[in-house]
Length: 215
Image (cartoon, rainbow, N blue to C red):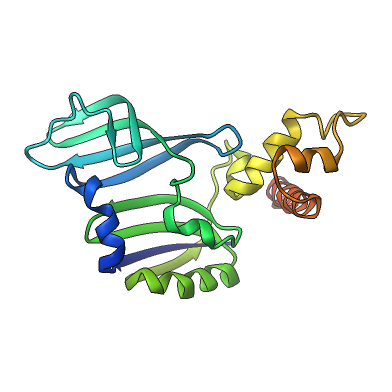
C-alpha cells in the first residue's frame, strides 16, 4: 500500500460550486475523521477553519454542508471545531471512483486549491490520478509507503469496507451460530450479496495482514 499526497488547482466549474462555503472562510483542514458511518448517516470530523477577517465563529451553525457541533479552540481567525458532515457530500466528487481508497490526512481545502492524501494500491492510485485530472490542474504529488495507526485496526480499511464489516458485526454475521445470512445482510446494507462478500473478504484480508505483519 502507498500513500499519495496530491495538490490540485480546481477548474472554474468546480470552484463555482464552492463559493457559498468560501464566502465565510479562507480555508479549512480536516485534522481527524472521528466517525464515519454511512449506514447510520453519521460523519463527524475534527476540522480547523480559517475564517475571513470580517466573519465571527460565534453564531455560525454551519459552513457549507458542515454542521458545527462545537468550537473546541480559537486562536485569531483559526477555530478548531467538531463538525458533522452530510455523509452524501463527504467525499464530494470522489464518490464516483470506487477504487478501494482510504482518504486520510493532510486534507487542506481552499478556494484556489485542494490538498488530499489517499492510501491505496499503486494501481488504484494511478487510476485515481488519471480520473482526477478532469477536475483541474495537478500542481504537485508525492508517493510514500503507507503507515497505519496501530491503535485503530479498522484504519487499514476503506470507508466502505469498514461500513460493511461494522454492519456484519452489528447484525450477528460473525456470531456462532450466525444470526443473519449473507443474503439478509446484503439487503440490510442495500448492496448485492456478491458485492457484500467481496467487501468482507477484502476487509478480513487487510485486517489479517496487518495483525500478522512481521510473522
